[in-house]
Amino acid sequence: MDILKEKKKNTGRKKIEIKKLDKVSNKQVTFSKRRTGLFKKASELCILCNVYIAIIVFSPADKLFCFGHPDIGAIVDRYLKGATATATDFEPSNSKQKSVVSYEECNKQLDEAMTKLEIEKKNLTQSVILAKTWNRRWWDDPIDQMSDDQLEQFMVSIYELRKKLAERAGELMMLGVI
View: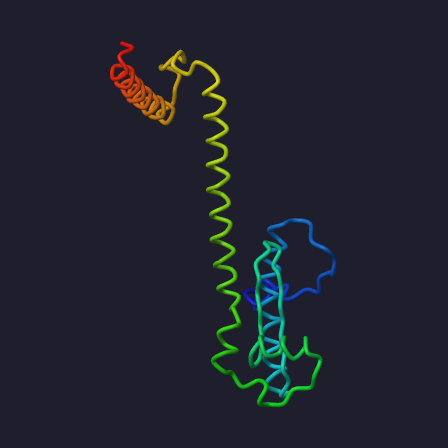
């Protein structure tokens, strides 16, 4: 009997106060859990009541999530037209399916765009650094204080300078200046 008394009590579910969350990580976790529940309830409502539902949600990370039964594109079209729909309006056709982009595709496009943006930011930063170094005498910098990447860039710059000097000397020789 002592074993039963010593058994740890579970707190179970607790009702939480509904208020805006401050921490970004908490927002994302709560959003993910509640989005799943929201979509599940919407699906149940569609089945039980034979209704058409479209849900479009943007996460705290600005990613798009959609739920639609039977087809989100048809439901949105019906809403925009403001007309009553018949059952045939919601039968998927090839033309409608091609015009609707899934949220996975939207998220993929967003991720690709964000990756391209990061690459462009890095390229711009490198261009600014190169522009700053070009205005000074970079060949006078002490080599022993450079990182591996800086040394590699230094070598590339030296080879490019050497190549340009050789080309210019060749041009001047042909002109007979030298």
